[in-house]
Each structure stands twice: as structure tokens, then as C-alpha cells.
Length: 365
Image 1: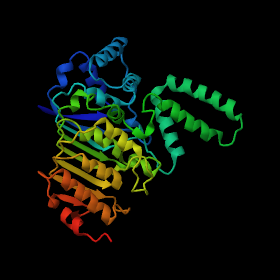
Image 2: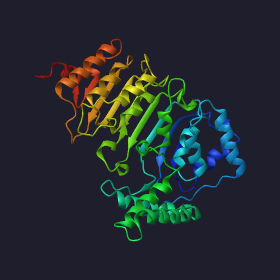
Image 3: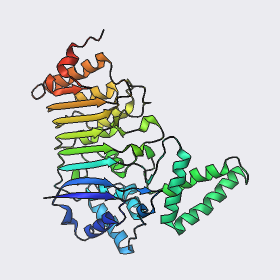
Image 4: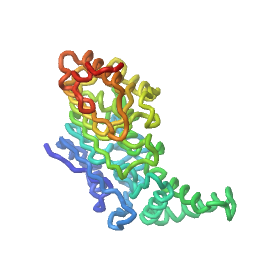
């Protein structure tokens, strides 16, 4: 039994070396019972963080493909391509989870979504320049080839003197350089999330089948340039909630699906579609805790309806926004108590500092 620190994009290539070892020693990760993720993303202002591209041998590339195809399920094809792309070591996390068959706790740490910092949420052009500068440095000839192709494409479309041509080129170059290294659906942010999205009751990464405790922090330096994506999207939650042995889930900055942040009553189809994958299933979770949350009443009720073993629930909303109307808080508490009669009492429900008993008697007129 041992704890392991997974270092994303660390300059010593730790994770690349460890997966290289796994290729011929796949049992090496079986004694890992806890993983803590550490985020060492590249920072445009600190060249010592500009981790160089990893290099696989042709034999190792073949071994990766063969090994992944032998695992049921393995990681997605896009994840394998990112691993072979050798830039974003976060792609190695879901691959590692194929071998940690005795994992009990996964602590994602203070998650940093962007591949390159700083990510300015009020200046997407500045963020693009940072990304281009660093990726150009670490990709070398690959980046130079992409630059020539981008210039030709842009000039053909906009002419030699098109307005804001330099800005257009920068944005396109960022997109092209990220291709294959970062999920195409950018709001997913991590390859771990992309693999979660592909999961279901009969398609769980081997290392998550025994997981009991899940922790997910959030580093605000990774904000998207839009409030609606500022946090851990709630539609990831069911894939953790219905893991077969899950007992506790603690998440910072969980936010409501694809709705604008101001629409707290949003009940879009995304959550319904995901819950349909887990039709008639109830979660084994005993402890749910959400800090700095901004999740709509509709999604919270749907989550509450799918629990039946809860012993403790804590939800603390974002201070800068009104979180729940009185009648909605009362509704959530009522649904929780109805579905967890044998395990949950009103005193063990805490929503925005009020326990369940207080919510049940609050004046919602």
C-alpha cells in the first residue's frame, strides 16, 4: 500500500518515465492506494517550467497502442494520441488509472486547466500569445512548420493587410498548436474529464472501480474567459457519484452545466442525458461536500434523488452570488431526507450555513 504524487508537466518528466516503466512492468502500480495530483503547468514568465517534449521510441509507441487495446476499457483514442504527442502529461493520468486496481483515494489537487499560464480570463489574446510562445519553444520544427501553414492560410483568407491580421494569426496558431495535446471540446479541460465523459456503469477505468474517496480542488488561475465555465462542471459528477464503491466526494467550485452563471434554475438536458446512463442506479456515497458552489436547484434535486446512503451533505455557495431561494433549499432538504431515510438526519445537512432543520422551517412565502 502506498501513496503516489502525480506531477502534471513536471520538468523532470517524472510521469513520462513512470509510464515508460509501466509498459514492461504493468503490475508496478497495483499497490498504489492513493494518488495526489500536483500541478506544475508551464508558465510563460518562468522558462524553468517549460518542460520539454518527451520522446517515445518507435517500439514504445507500438507497446502503448497494444497495451491500451488489451485493457477493457482502455483510455480513449484521443487520449492515446495526446500521450504519443508527448507534451501534456495530464493525459497520462487516465492511462495510469488503468493499472491502479487497488486505488481507494484520488485527490486531484488544485486543478489547473490551461496547458500554459498565465491564462487571462479577461484577455484571450494575451493568453493565446503566452500559449504560442511556450509551445513554439518546446515543439521546435513542428511549430515552425505549423507557423508557415497558418500564415499561408490566413493570408489567403484575409489578404496581406487584413485588419487585425496579427491577432487572427495568434488565435489560429494557438488552436493549431494545442490540437491533439488538449481535448478538442475545450470546456472539458482535462483528459481525465474526457475519459469520464465516455464512461458508464459498464465502462469504468479499472483504477476507479475500487475508488472510495474523491477530492477535487480548483485553482482560479485556470478560469475560462467566461463565468459559465468557471469551475468543475456539474455534469462530471454522476460519473463519480455512481462509481461502485464510492463513499465520499469533496469538490471545490462545482458549477451548473452549460447554463449562464446567472440562470440558477437551469435544467438543461445535459444532466438528464448523463443520468440516463445510470438509469435506476443509486449512489453508495455517504459524504458529499461542495464548497464555493454555483449549481442550480434542478441539478441538485436530480442528484439528491439518486442518493440513498448519505450520512452528511455540505453545500457552501459562492459568496458573490445569490445561491438558492428559500423554497428551493427546502425542496432539496426534503428530497434528501426522503431518499436517505435510514442514514441521513436533517441536522447533518448544511446548505449555506443553515442545517436541514432550519431550511425546513424557513419562510418561503
